[in-house]
Amino acid sequence: MSTHELYTIPAELSTWDVEMAGSTRFTWEYDDGRDRMLALYQKGKDKQWDSVKRIDWGLEVDPYDVLGIPDQSIAIYDTPLWHRMDEKQRKEVRRHGASWQFSQFLHGEQGAMICSARIVESVPDLDSKFYAATQTMDEARHAETYARFLQEKVGIAYPINKYLKSLLDDTLSDSRWDMPYLGMQVLIEGLALAAFGVMRDITTKPLPKQILAYVMQDEARHVAFGRMALRDYYKNLTEAERREREDFVIEGCYLMRDRLRGVEQWENLGLSPQEVKDAMRAVDESQYLRLFRSLLFSRIVPCVKDIGLWSERLQKAYADMGVLDMAGQNLDTLMRQDEDIADKLDAERFATEQEARAEEVSATISLGAGDPPPEH
Image (cartoon, rainbow, N blue to C red):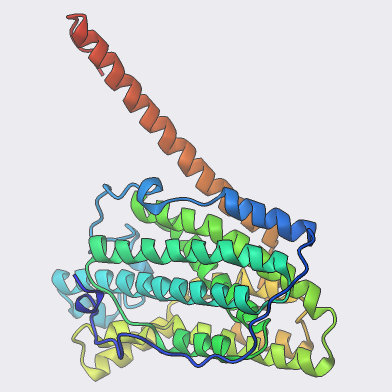
């Protein structure tokens, strides 16, 4: 089935062409490079995985309860609009909410794949080119995984949100080599990583938990890559150059905040224009979603501070968004947790498979000896 048949609303074009500027840079310096970057590159090679084999696609998913979380997480829960709906309409609200979220993850991963390929092309350092090449493969795997999840388990999809599209356009059309790092590794990946983390931690369903945990294990390296490269480079910026990057970050963060409102999912549920307005008011006033939006900046704000973009003007913008206190988050601790959770899932799954295999072998031996199979 064509993905276009899954879209709830028409996608504008089958392809989106972004005019890119800037130089493709070759380097003839093949010495070892920076130890930290090469260690990250080695880790990127070691941690490659196959989504067909690592993820248990045989697990069932209820498309009307994708994450298995309480309805209290839905913005319109317990509002007059919610009470006017019957159970069939509420099921569609749940399905479309999950579809919209995972669709934006999918489009963001394709954007990340293209941005990381752009970094390979434009970054001047060979060690950065090496690592970005492994990230390009990671992002291809993530896009493959989310596309399969939407196609096989959810059954509907949404086109790219206009705010995400705008930030990708700004990121890819800028001629400066560091902007794909800043737009993708810090802003888009940082927000996605936090969103994945919240959903990974609250879902009670094993398949989305696997997907989110395994993708996050890769993304933790990607954000570390962006931090490492930009922290070194931004030490030497002029005041004017630093201000330009801060303007980009401020505008990008407002775009990411507005992206989270997801107006298109409400417009597509057959609601009246007034009901759509009521739904968006509930989105803006929801205490749960306010907390969710705040948590989504838990990776971006400390990363922006870490790379050296931390003027009073930028801090004021974060205070206006209500996320300035996220600057105190420890990124290294969060990244270690992301890796540990994925490794633990692997260990638990391997232990279960080994136990099932041992029982199968024992039963086969018993049958061969004429003994009754062991009781469970």
